[in-house]
Length: 207
Image 1 (cartoon, rainbow, N blue to C red):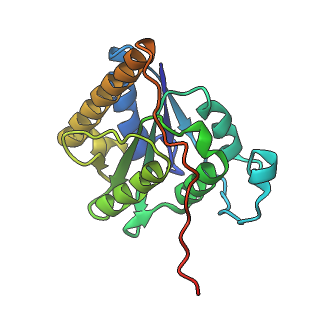
Image 2: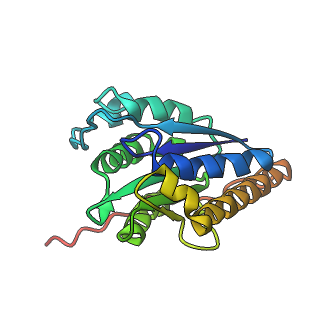
């Protein structure tokens, strides 16, 4: 079993990184492999709504989104970490998630997902909510902790002092490992996803 941990901060070794390191360490103690994937600090364009991914199976922009999508096919679970900028999600991570879930949602569907947020003080819960919406539209079980999955601080050293935040990361990892093991046991027992075969309905209120 492997969980991909996505660092959505433009700072490779910052607050998000420290939070994910704590998650990765606890996952490994639970016998689950963990890899931290940094989306980088190069500009990531937003979705162009061009439809290229529908006919080609990947995003028209050849960057971290397509690279990660290939890894996602083999992963069993995901943790997406984003920093808070002006009480909202950092732009690069928002573009990454928009394009990833639209072009490669099938690679993540039915697999557990967790959101992690880093902020100095405020705005964390709105970003936490925003990331979780990507999971719920894609039929992914949400992994929770004993508090909202967040750490606080201006830098990595500050996060090191956030004892409750790091505790929350460890519990998150334990819960992720538990659900992954339950899914694995279910598959061995012959239990498969019972997703509806009904064709999706789309309602548009247009006369």
